[in-house]
Image 1 (cartoon, rainbow, N blue to C red):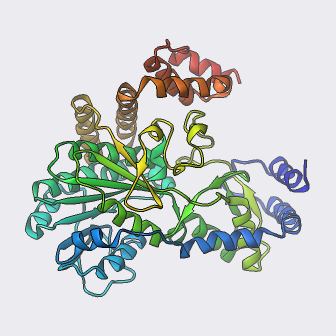
Image 2: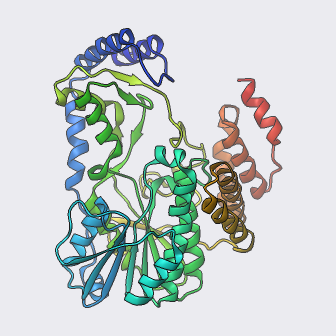
Image 3: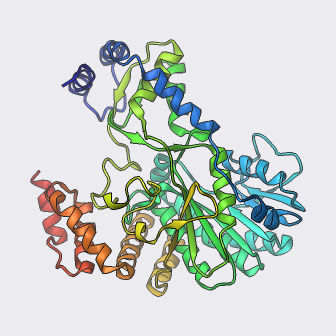
Length: 462
């Protein structure tokens, strides 16, 4: 065991995870151990610099195709007041549109010259219909969403109403208004075939909605999965605020690694998706090379050193909205390094190059809609009443049903390979992952090995 691992073990032993508030004695001890960590990890500043430098990255965009689609056209961007929306509007202004319209709930922090700003709640289908039928845009980019996973857990009804039902409202209204091209902003968290986390769940539902709309062939639909955007980082803001206020810097885990991209890459990725050929299937675009993942511990230590304050690090444990460990069958080593890490093992065999050499594309099969639409309608009704408990239960049932339909359409050979990959890890799986794995096995041709009761008993015994 190296010195850093030993210090981290002492931190966790002396001040265990789970505390909402820490007494002064614990804070003092954490401050001492953090100072030792800083001495033991002198290169944390270099890792913070690498993380911050991601903001300057960009990817190539097919200029002629994008200019043809934007030049002289009316373009609508939902969520245009946010960080990514503002950067996308900046990019679009250079392509000669006839009119750019931002649709958001809030005023922009940095208005883009020449952009018309409209205040509309995407949860209000009538308001969305009136706006899009009046404007009749050629292109809609849909970025409006609740994006904070922690807040999504505290406000499940509002988040699912915005991210799932709101996406359906905008996409169907755009289709009715004769929009030719629609771009949807999803998240890397949606690569999980199933998730009980509200934010990931809501965005995966948004991808399903887009698949249904695209399958009708009346509107060209493509989307993007974004990972951690440094320019708009919730983690970075929280760490710096904690240092400024002299509060503990809270980490989920000292072992957390994550990929990052820039706001400019994200906007360019939306333009690459727009340039995808017109076909009646929803295409998801992801940046292929996101560089080596960032180590969260080093970012936190680098920010503490940057602040010049003796802010203590606290390993607080995973909060709701953040998954401690992925499903063991999430990735297939056969494709590792060749495809974007935002593409899962089910999707990898379908991936193909895009119009940009930096981007992979996955055509997403449209799932059968009957039962799922009924569940989505029930979810909307519970969202309207603000009943978080019923919203969560209904959303979870919908998420499991979506997984079932996804696996029903998957290639048997792909499912069998995933089952072989997960077999050595079954004894260590959570109840949620066991249920997922049993569904994979059933669709691959093997019987489930655990009932829900057996899953709960297995977890209780550990």
